[in-house]
Image (tube, rainbow, N blue to C red):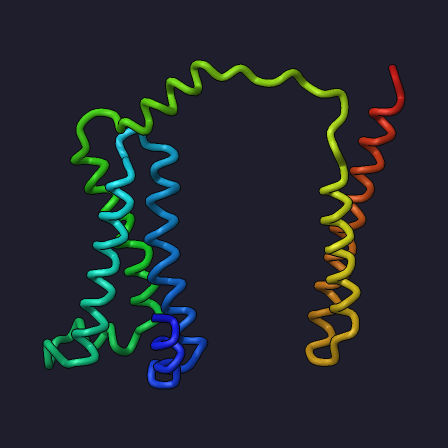
Length: 191
């Protein structure tokens, strides 16, 4: 499948169009139902697959209808053909949201997975609080941000924008280090 896609990239409008279309048509239908399921006691795994399949059918159907002129003279297909990226974004967002909304409204009772989660949550006991939290992740982020800022300083194109962005990155990195040192000082001073 990947090899076939790689061979067809030039016919599909180039790498940029293929990647953007895949991201818009795949990521939304995969993420929206998963996030929705985190907050809804009615949504189960089957709902995720229904939303993904409905979005794939709508996206594939619209692409095939345009490619093979299945509905000649249709104003809607003409609009879809001229606004391809907007259509992909709408299909990738509105179709999964609509499918999840319909499933949410039509669902009866609570999902078995939600019930298991509630039972686990009732049995959960939080671990005892430790005395000190590791600041290593904050220092890694600060160092990475500082390195990105230094790399931005060496750019030759659009130097003004990159200098501004680099200055902002250095500021963020400095704030992280300042907060880290302040917390380290406060935790070491017994009061």
